[in-house]
Image 1 (cartoon, rainbow, N blue to C red):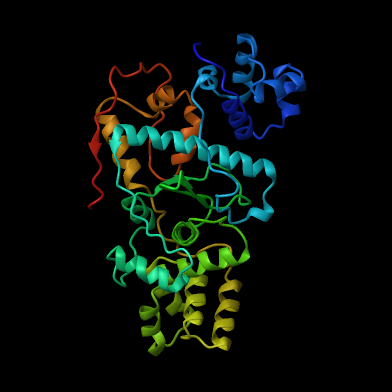
Image 2: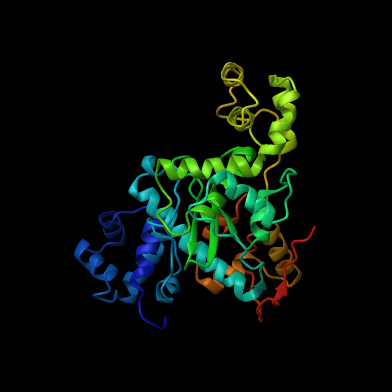
Length: 366
């Protein structure tokens, strides 16, 4: 292996594994003092120790000799359930974000992805910001067919949240203040994940220059998402319609939102009285619709990733080839795209392709 051991990559791999320094030292058969020296860049681990660290952490030995990996910071990542997260869960999610940054750089190098077009409405009222986004993106007041496709078409990099837990919710982050990323929890219902996508867009639009956390910040992102997905004018037009649970179930399918999100929005714009709003919430709750969705919509998938892997498949390449080039575990990349696009990992014995994929433009016009 050539190059200098990168201590930052060791820290990232340990955080992804949610291992403490003490636990990693014990598993790798080194002292905590030695491991501290490796992570602080004060000493270079010998080859046999690198192999042990590689085995314990599940990262190729070559990974530890690459360039510095940029990752989202706790200060600029919009974790929605921040207070319920352990430090280990937070750090593991941020480390996964760093792997997503690496994967995204590979995509940018090999494909022409859509340019970033996310407006900066810092400090603006969330309702007004949502209306301006619809105007700037020429969405009118019609239902948004697919939030993932919409975000991707505006240059937002969308990935799956790799943590298999509900404590770590969707989050977003700007990379170097230029490229926006959104990570979606695929454990949630399609409607909730769609709202999360709109919520995270709210953070990207409203909170680009600050720390996107806190109760007030979350309320602003929720208000933006609600207004974006359910335009005020179209909701007010329902004032003449008798709103019952069957009617809620009919309307929610048109707008692809959860029943609870719909009744909240109708109440917020003044279509529902306080009494009717509470009555509908009680009835929907009795049907278990605070935690799940009856007659749920299909989960939204990625158009960018679909086109990328279709192009790669035509060239006889797959996800394992990307993992080899980035010296990453293929499982880490697969988790980032899980539920966003179907893709084969490929075979263990597949030979690396002789040439890089063709640089091509990914059209998002359907």
